Amino acid sequence: MISYKPFQKLLIDKGIRKGDLALRAGISSATMARLNSNKYVSLVVIDKLCAVLGCQPGDLLEYVPEEEGAGAQ
Image 1 (spheres, rainbow, N blue to C red):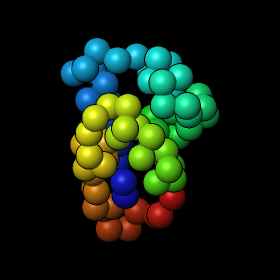
Image 2 (cartoon, rainbow, N blue to C red):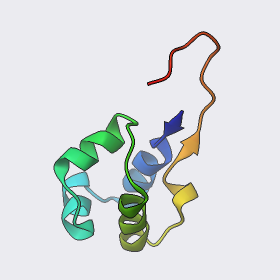
Image 3 (tube, rainbow, N blue to C red):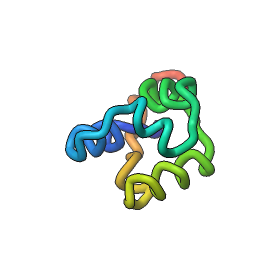
Image 4 (cartoon, rainbow, N blue to C red):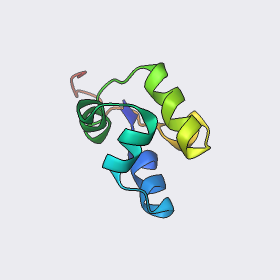
């Protein structure tokens, strides 16, 4: 599973509010909600976030293996 926990931490570390970032990156509040719940977002969104935050994709997400027996989302 892909987790956006590093993204959440980056925003806290930089003191950036999610609403402000959404405006600066030109992404919707629905897309921000998808990030908050570890749902799929396109690489276009990742690209926009990296451009605004001055970071690499690996700074926004991480791979977390699912436990055996857990269903895919």
